[in-house]
Length: 337
Image (cartoon, rainbow, N blue to C red; front, side, top):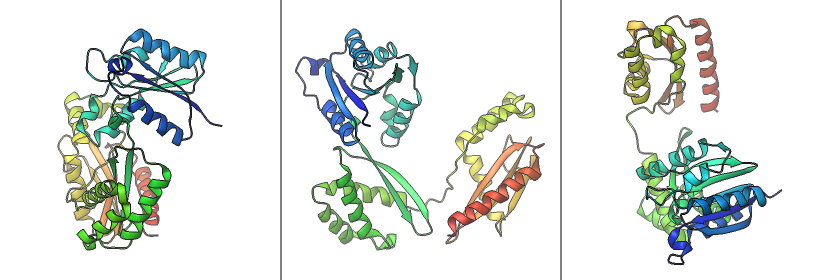
């Protein structure tokens, strides 16, 4: 079953014929290559009534599954596509524009300036996209696996839409040239040879290699990932003191203090094992009413990682330590295959 799709370009100049629409056809091409059947396209000016009319037509009359708008998501007084969209949808889907902005922020800080909205009307999903072809172009996710099963990834923006055949060919060129070669052995001659094989896509290859070089560059600071910080609100001894709660949240958000905890854990763990810090034993400010249980695991090649649980001092230590031991076992299985 092929899902139907529509593309609506919102542009005053495009509607008047003063500017060529490049983003609309670009989206049609992407949707078609992704397996959608594009059954309707339209060009409208930045007028809320006309935008709403097209969205209602696509959802109510044509019963189209996916409607993409392009244009009118910026800060100009005439950029009202999100407002028009919210005026016709019945349920908002905020996670979609949030995810798009998050991905754009990995490429440019200006990604946060998009006001795109998304929502559902009937059985139609409506999503706002930026108006430029460059902004609506695809990104390449470069996944780099280096020795020791360490995986790094980075997003690379491309100005042209690449079909699956082209992506596969570029992937094979890179893998055949770089697989099994130490990072320090990749030189200008290697890069020149790869770019020659890529032909017209040599710029993309160069961007991928540059991104890979950045991704595998040694980083002295540990990477910290956190989740569930708001769970502290469940415990009166942690949430009752607003000053203390603020320090806790700050530690989670800024992560510098957590970094010092990880460094201390790594330096003290001669062998992989469990460590428990209670109250004043914590090497962090604002954590006196907390406990931390950490487990250090071996990634091989001299690399280590730490996973930990932060909670109140009255936590169920036996249960938490049991869980951490099981996590260590699973991580050992994963990284020592």
